[in-house]
Each structure stands twice: as C-alpha cells, then as structure tokens.
Image (spheres, rainbow, N blue to C red):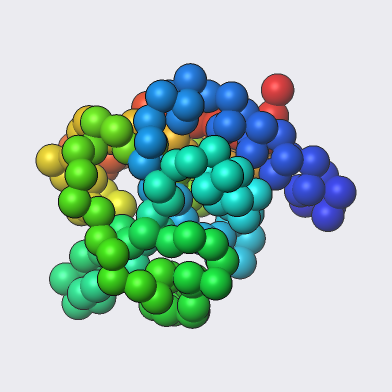
Length: 167
C-alpha cells in the first residue's frame, strides 16, 4: 500500500471502530499494540482511554505453551518491546471482570466476510478466547486483507465483525 492509502484506511478503520455500537456499549477494550505492517491502533487506544474505557493489551506469559493474558494500560508509556519485539504491557494489572463487557480488537494476516481469520501462526488468540465467547470480537484490517474465504478449523475463533478500510 502507498503511505497515503494506508493512512486513509487507518483513519477510516478507527472511525468505524469508534462508531460501532458494540464498542460504545462495552467498557473494557482489549486491543493489540500494532507491530510492523499491522493496522495501527494508536488512535483507537487514545480515543478509548479518552472515552472512559478501560484498555487492556496482550502479553505473552508462556511462549512454550502459547498463552497470553491481557493487562491494563493507561497509554503508550505502559508498553515496551516484549515477545518478538511486539509492544506489550509493562504492568501487571490483569483483567478479572466479565467478558460480556469486553470489546476485543484483533489483528490478522487475512479475514473473510464470515469473520474467519488467519493470524500469524501460533494460535495465541484462539487459545485465549476459548471459553470467552461473551467477548465481542472485531477483527481490523486493510481492505487488501479481505479474501473470499479463509479455511478454518473448529478451534479457530471467529470474529463477530470484520472492520476494514474499505467501503
């Protein structure tokens, strides 16, 4: 993508997330801190904090077993390079609330219109989401990352909504 296209789509994705009725109805936002070519989440994080949401970011807690947990952040200063250089929370204030109040924003390599996604191969999100079906899952991506159909397995988490930078 050209830099101006990328910037335009990131702004559009942010606006769509912030207008999403599910986002507005829930008080906890679980969101990744962007790494490499992922959709930037900086603006969403800032706005979520400004809107009074409690914001949590993922941290790999056991690489060998592929497990992660979400920890509260109050801004970019609460993140530092962690697993594979990916920004992770430095604090230890974990989430202990109800998942029916969680709006989770997930990255992915590709998504399809049915909410299936291909992640980055380790299954961290799929394992984390097992038993947490009450959380609303929104996958965000650039329009070029939407494909007709993503192959899936029974253990793969399916998004409730896919938000892209397309129309």
